[in-house]
Image (cartoon, rainbow, N blue to C red; front, top):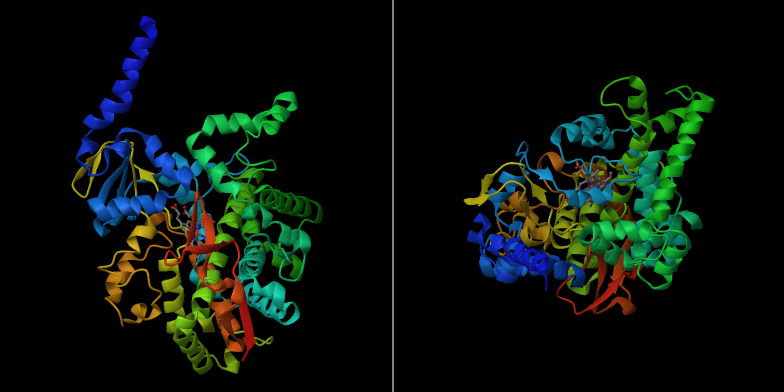
Length: 529
Ligand code: HEM
């Protein structure tokens, strides 16, 4: 070994081993293997065990644990306020940049609060509860119409509807595209049988998506290089099976659909001179989120947006609005269909029958988005589903450019801190019998509801809380009420003994009381009442 490489190795040891062991973060409890190298947590990521491993560390070491030389996980309410409270100054980390679309940042990926706040101002009203529930806005007819299409699918193609992982994804796909793009410029019709719209789900189903996410996070430059190679080298990379996910890589058709929706809209506004309220069709097109952003871009107001900014923003909401809502609906219907939970399904049906009258339904007989917002037991069922089966259960990383303190620990500038809904939602002192599906806990029959609400974190909190929450709630309440007004549900024989499972980032999530899982599939029988 020559002198240069000895010095290099010495620097490596100091940087990788001694520094992590002498940093102020050493006071934070945890396992040394996590403290000395980021690859220990990366191994959990690779195995798909990250969130459960961190949860295990919290069970053993308490509410603050070191999970990497530069990363601390917390699980207390005080840390939640310090890190995620409005105006805390903590920013999203670079981790989120993998959600940039077409090379542009968007609401989800902006780190700085000013840029984020400016973009949010343009969108906040469209996603507000009053707008989502307004009889004059785009969401109401869209969601009620899609609930009707879901019931039609059960009537006309019962076997197809019965595999609810897919059929509910079609519901959320049609709902989010109609809301973002409008019917004329990208609204999909998967529930009504459009095969190319349905095929977009293949982007989501490929398990290689988890591997690609791991590469994109842990080997960012190498992954970018792999996918940018063309010609002979590109073919050699493919032939040697070096790509973590075969081309076309993740979300290709969803992103292509999103870009086409924007370019179609842009050429229409230029050629037809579409203006709000000139015709009914134009008015519908102009009510979409995409049109809202376009109107802002032509208003001359700051911040300036160009076409790719708009396309990126809407494409990100598109992705954020598919799995989250349909995975939650799937777990809710599956949980209500289990024999041991029949009492909850009966209670929900009794509530729907007593509180939803013919006057609460639209001309198609579908309960309105406003009426279903007033059902307390339904709300408890959805909250309990989001608690136990949060569709985004993993840690939400943040950092601050200056030194600070969290829960009494000195946190040097740039340290990554995070909390996960998975761990918050399994605190047995707040949620007695945390692994059991018990909707009645939200009605005060098991634990302290006020306290539980403080710990409920499925939609995050503070300035970076989910902007799509009211849209998602309207979709979920309408679909579940419309369904249980007309049907009861049970597990199919082939589903018995296994939990449905979903993918989130690197991991697969399911009901951990089960040993068998059915990933991306859930078989339910619908029985007309
Ligand atoms: C049950 C349904 C949903 C759940 C549980 C959920 C959950 C979340 C969570 C936990 C975050 C914060 C993530 C983080 O900081 O790492 C988030 C942010 C976000 N969500 Fe949702 N989401 C849902 C539905 C939707 C829908 C339907 C949309 C449609 C537009 C949407 C759009 C967004 C956006 C744009 C952000 C970024 C907000 C910001 O940074 O200001 N979500 N969501």
